Length: 322
Ligand code: HEC
Ligand SMILES: [Cu+2]
Image (tube, rainbow, N blue to C red; front, side, top):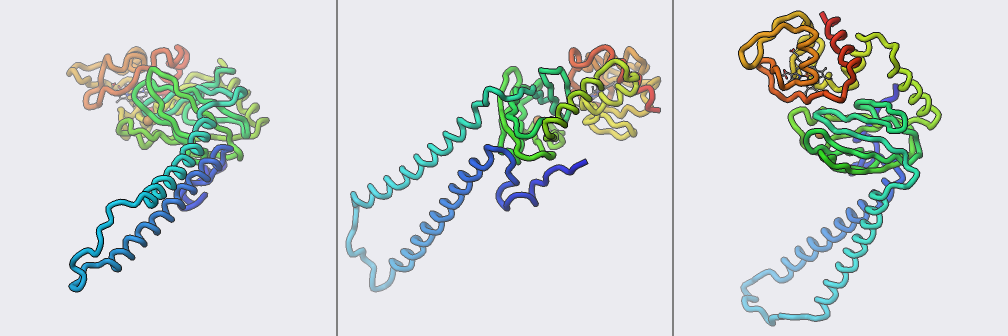
C-alpha cells in the first residue's frame, strides 16, 4: 500500500506540505507574519545596536546635551503604522477563520469519536464504522462532527492545516477538502493519558469511484456471514483493543490475551476467577466489576458499542489464542 505522506521531508523547513484548498491561504498568512517578524527583528536590533555605539557614554560626554520628552509626529507614526499592520493581519486571519469554521452545505458528513487512545469514524449514510482509518473521497468537502467519550482530545491533520478540540458531552465541527489522493497523518494534540502519543490515525483519500467501492466492501464485510473468530480478530484491531492488549504475552496497558482462556485469574480484591465466557463477557461490558490484580482500572465499558454477536466474536477469537 501507499506510504503515509511524510511531515518533515515534504513541504518546507517551517511547515509540512499543503494539501487542502484552505492550506494555501493559511500558509500565505503564516509566511506574511513570518517575514514581517524577520524584517522587524532585523530593523529593531539594527537600530538598537547602532544607537548603542553612537550614544555610548564616554569621558567627554557625561551630561546629556538635551532631554527630549515628547515628539507628537514620531508617536503618531509609530502608533499608526503598527495599527494598520495589525488590523490587516486581523482582517486576513478572521476571513480565513470564517472560511475554516463554516462548512459548505454539500459537505459529506462523518462522525468522529475520540476515546483513550484511538479515533473511531462512523458514516451516518451507511452505518459503516472504522477505527483508526478515516477514508474520504478526494476533492469533496468533508464535515466532521466530533465528540469524545472520556477526556479532552484534539483532532489534527497537519497537511490540511485543520485542528480542533474534541470534548466529551459536546460536538465540535471541522471541515476540509483534500486536493490529492494519498494517506495523511492524523494526530491527537491534547495530552490525554499515558498512551497519548499512540493516538494517531490515518486519513486515506481515494478517488470518488474507489471510495464508493470501498464503502460497498465495508458494508459487505459487516454482514452476518463472517465466522465468529474472524469477526473477533477484525474487531480486535478495529475497536482499538490492540492499543492495550497484546497477543504475544507482552504487557501493553492491560493483560495480554495469549492463553488466558481457561486460566485462573487473581483479582485485585484477592479473589480468584476462572477465565470463561461469562468472565470475558463481563470484562468487556463491565470492565470495572472485576479488576485483574496488578493492572489499573482504566478500560472503558464497551456496553452499547459492541453487539452481542461482536462480543461473541471476540470471545471466540480469544479462545483461539493458545
Ligand atoms: C485503554 C486500554 C484498554 C482498551 C482500549 C481495552 N482494554 Fe481490556 N483491559 C484493560 C486493562 C487495563 C485491563 C485489566 C484491568 C481490568 O480487569 O479491568 C483489561 C482487561 C480486559 C479483559 C480481562 C482480561 C483478563 O486477562 O482477565 C478483557 C477480556 C478485555 N480487557 C477485553 C477487551 C476488549 C475486547 C477490548 C476492545 C473491544 C478491550 N479490552 C480494550 C485495558 C484496555
Ligand atoms: Cu487523545
